[in-house]
Length: 612
Image 1 (cartoon, rainbow, N blue to C red):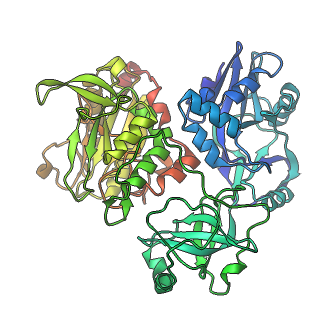
Image 2 (image 1 turned 120 degrees about the vertical axis):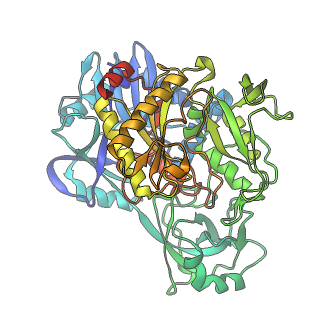
Image 3 (image 1 turned 135 degrees about the horizontal axis):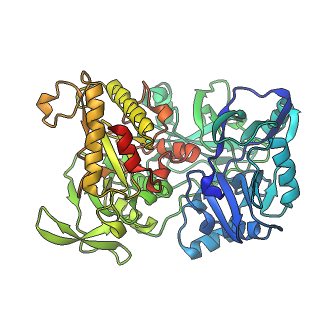
């Protein structure tokens, strides 16, 4: 047994705390869920979606290695805390994006992590998952001594409501309730429940975005206004309309607050007169309020009646780590309807790199560049530009259209991704095969293209394909295209060549079209589709490309291709509902539901037998 064999147990949401015999209550930590494994002296830290974080958190690896005794597997949360013990997710996210040894070492010393172990799943060669949680907890506390970097977590028994009140007072993340008699079972179970807290406060408005889609906030510390962050959620021109004239009239040339505001070329500073109420997730010391959401304007309060909450000293937010690529013309507007600049595009690709880079690595890349914005001319770029920096990796590929060999870009790291974004790259198009295993496909993709058919039909057909795949024992992962359709990705583990992946796709597409002839078709001629969804298997095959997960599409609102849980593929889903302004909070909260695609290797031969 090792950590790769373990499906994490997840908690279901609950609406309110309770007091109940036989239940234990723990803090809900604002960090990365991690299985910590030590087998044969080797330590691994596996994140929720299976990627290995050991190299990025060497202090935790060292601490796990120092635990006395033999082999074990722990379940817990990786957290970075401030001096008062409050989690700072921004620092954790920053460290999770680093790749260079020197950067990792510097950040480890500046922002060391801690691992809060709340379950013991294996001790020696003994699998403990069938034991009641109460017994597993007792063994955890005995097996793992408390240390600076590894801390076994006990529970508060029965008194969930009282525990929640104490957590609220400390403005922490929330609580988790667990049935102490339950075994450890993979998936989301009602034996583990979670309650995530939100807090609210009043803020003085000290600026607004030129597109009227955000406000800049501050609080009063008794002497000065102190910068508190930026709220965009819940803000739009319609919400701003009643106070727009007041904001314009109160504009000033210089900021009216202390603390460093982020570099905000779209900001107009104002006198602190207007007050809003906002909900937020938490407020780490010396950082901006996290994930604020606008609630209402407060006409009944003055700006100086917005005090700093006790224990919080708010300064500038932590910037996203840059790999050092110089960004040119960062204020150039690429999405004119939304005011989204190239700088924002680069920031998005930096922030999403943690989830995006695994899909890009070791694959020839085709860029689609929009140097004059989405309304200007655009062009494809396969061949590397002549002035590409030395760090950009390339691979010699045959361009069949031009009948010549070209040097194609390979995006393996954050520096190259930043450089691509600086070229005003929007969609990133990927092959299914890797350089190291050329012509062996990692996936088969079915593209549901509605054109003028209702998107509800796409949802019906995608779920029908899921059922087909489940019967064949094939994993399947949905994602929006960010444009008009939906992709369903089936992992192949490089067991088929590209032509074989296409043939599998054709079989699956035909099965769906035959089962749902009124709403779907495999007809490639558009005028013959008769308002039906085109079930397209021909995004598979030699040299075929798809839009990468998390890439930005050249459409208003800057929509992105977003990986989904199957529970989200239901009426109400739209292909463009995720964009560069809401994607990162979602990924921070849920992770990438499709991360296993790159590593799974299902029984293809057996699946084909079950399909026919």
